[in-house]
Length: 203
Image (tube, rainbow, N blue to C red; front, side, top):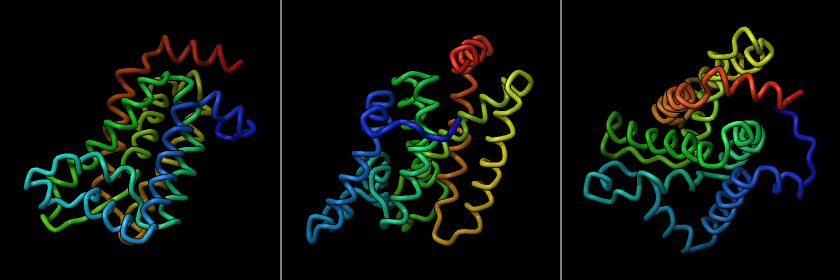
């Protein structure tokens, strides 16, 4: 399910939304390492709670496209590359984007509400965890009809939650809230009829 066998052009053709999100994140990261320009991007785009309080509401969205370093970017984009295609294929472009952006947005909102005013954060992790949450909704509906999905997804979700608390400098608030929002949206999208049709398409 999560093994990718497409070549580069096929991947872009089959999964345009995932491909576009990866490209945007990579391009913005490359721009962020350019002297001066990178400083401007982080100064005006990072999620800084007290600046959001001052009315800079765009910071609810812009942190989703900034990363603290190459490894941070690599981990998030590899996760998007791996988990995004199946969800885009199943949910469709608009619903996939809804899951991704709503999970990322609520991750930032939760961070704003629950963390200190001085808290600063960047990264697409909240949105990525939203994708895992949506897969969790699939497991909930298809726990009997697709037991192999449960065997794959549940360990990934559990390990991801554990790593959230074991890894330093991680925004656990965004991770957990993104996961929860993805799960709730997934419950509204993936009713049993869609699970059955998805299973037929996979045969």
